Length: 170
Image (cartoon, rainbow, N blue to C red):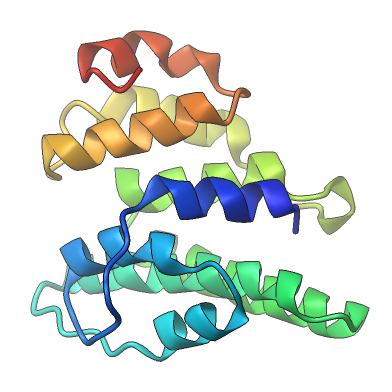
């Protein structure tokens, strides 16, 4: 996994302490993942979410965190194992609840994943989904703004410029 993805995702969310929490906590604390120890703490954090859809999105964040763990191990087989375990968790989360938040996580990983991992097949459909659904998504406008900022900051998804301006994300 590219270091760029780690840095980008760390910049995407604000710092928070680790404790069992709901979706807003996980959105904010995801940035706290700066090394192996904080990634492990993030993964160990209990989900205290009474909303099934939000619990599924939290699992999507944890899936991305598992993919990021590949950066903290040196054995190529361990790297591949961490990435695949995270990818499976993210994909299962999307199957259970295809929403803007989960799709944005997948597209960010896919545009940054090395090509040999063969994890880029959903980029076009994810772009279309996000463009169609972000305005109507039942998430706070601040989260929409953060998502759009992340998409624009990637430098690979200029299709979102107009929406990003609408939400003052750029």
